[in-house]
Amino acid sequence: MSPMPESRPYHHGDLRAALLAAAESTLREKGAGSLSLRELAREVGVSHAAPGRHFKDKQALLNALALAGWERLGQTLETVDDTALPLEPRLTALARAYLGFAVDNAELLELMYARKHDPEASERMAAAAERTVGGLTQVIADAQERGEIIPGDPEELNLLPGVALHGMAAFLSGGMLSPGAAMASVDTLVHHLLHGLRPR
Image 1 (spheres, one colour):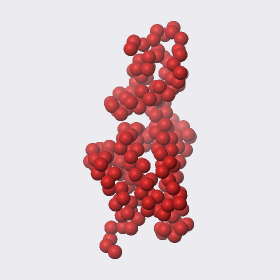
Image 2 (cartoon, one colour; image 1 turned 120 degrees about the vertical axis):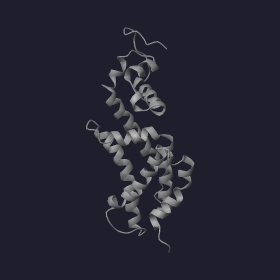
Image 3 (cartoon, helix red, strand yellow; image 1 turned 90 degrees about the horizontal axis):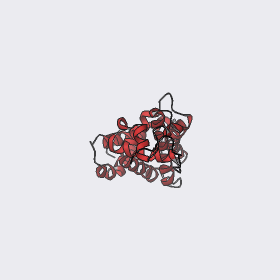
Image 4 (cartoon, helix red, strand yellow; image 1 turned 180 degrees about the vertical axis):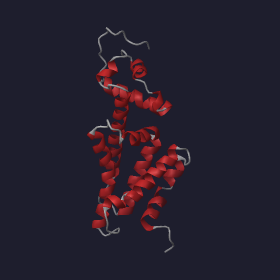
């Protein structure tokens, strides 16, 4: 589709959403280095200047993509979280959801962590990322209240499951672990996290 002339009125229903959808598609297929506001404008059928109404540059676009990813991951985890469950099945459900997100959104997850600490990242992104990490910390705190795990700083204790899950996601992204193998090992991973590897 050829780009619209600069003088043509713009009537795209939701340009920002269309650009983000096209950008995520490009990210999945070609990586972040292939993203270009001009190319995205051509893809959605608007003038090359039109994306500037929503994203001042490529970095702003990447931050918006990362924010959308964090918000989606947060919603995914909240959907499966059942506060009435004991720790092991609750953490297992959350781990499955996180790794499922990683399988379906490997490039996006990598971008999310890369942009999380960008100096231009908004407070909204920091809050969205904290919603994910903080949610897992709350799982630890809830388990402590029920006497299911040792006392201590929930944030510090949350490092172990956080590192394990993100490490699995990194293995998936790097091709060192297949999606099927990752999902099949979730129950065992969580069990060993909670009970250790020593014989009992």
